[in-house]
Image 1 (tube, one colour):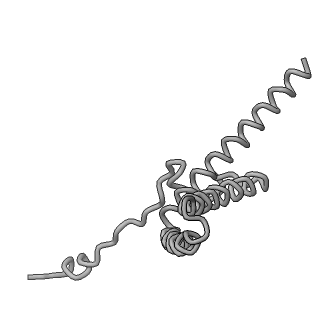
Image 2: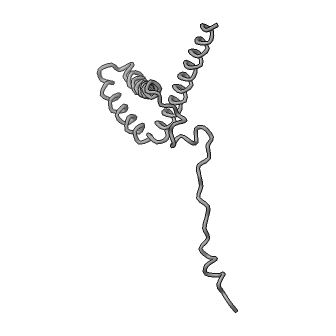
Image 3: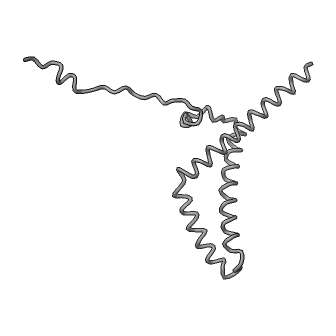
Length: 124
């Protein structure tokens, strides 16, 4: 009986780690595409220049090699960062800036209208 209870806890813990890793992977990939757009443009420029340089050495597969290398670098960076955050025990629900990810609404300030003090005291 005690063995089955510890087995269930191990399964729940591993599922929580997998869920955290997948959420971090999704979040970091979206942030790389949206916020890191200048970085993507810079990598594409360097990739084009590298492809032109490598074209003289290996004419058939230079573009394929450079494009595959850039894509693999991006995927590897996202997976390694997600793995490090998961290994450190940082859960995405602990982050304030990820409120959009778990559906929590941000606290909005109520509007204070400045016209009332000017018009409320008008006497005929």
